[in-house]
Length: 181
Length: 181
Image (cartoon, rainbow over all chains, first blue to last red; front, side, top):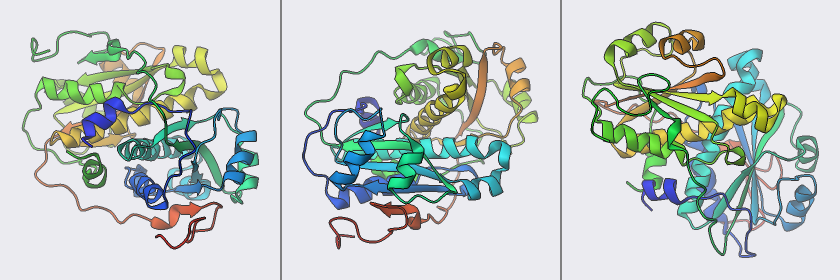
């Protein structure tokens, strides 16, 4: 699929069919994640891909943001020790979240490219997820990425074009070159 | 360009040529940003696209992370008031950063698709950038996105495959279906 099409057509999908996702597809989605840019090329992220339906059921119980049952959940985590040593205590969480989010966006685009719906979820109990998945103390679960096939994509929500400014904040119309919009 | 190619081949580019970027190309890059997913569809981001060479020179002075001169800089900002009202004081910064990062990743991929190099920069003086670009008090500059054409892409840095775990943290080999890697 063309990049532009993937960017424009990808929607957040929360309702999934029962159709399985093959392991090679999950591998391709995860590979897209590890090719995201990251601060200082630290790659302080850790991705735990859960496909076991029983475990997904347990995770759902502690994740208010998960309404339907996905076929897979990628838990996007950060190695807090690595991040702290590289970025310092003050910036560690900030850069880690930037890095995790870029990796997640790569994975969501690649999922859509493979016909798989996705949704990034922040509403979950990170302590419970840690215990369920044997995540060590120094690693934090930052985001759940739900993956599954879908009957239909949601309608695109309206986007705000007024967030775009040219040269200075508040200048929403003409740029330096003018007239070319 | 195929999505997969863009994801795998995009590199962080810091050294740019003097070749101009046309306004329609910048518009397409910014449009990719506004189609990123965001928490609660809040779209609390603001993108200030600077192309004026004199202003880019001034921004460079207050941005230690900018070594060469890009042709454009997109300042990725957050409306802190919107974020605070929607997400609450405790989570506002966290979700805002997730949203800005996903938008930035969309923009960097689309830039590469158009033959334009990019690099996300966190090392800049946000107060000075605010003053230079008339950014109001309730809006925070979170990231600079440098854009410019390039002579050559940097070599891909080695990626760590060991960050991928299956079913539980620490299980790096076989998944539920086994043997298909």
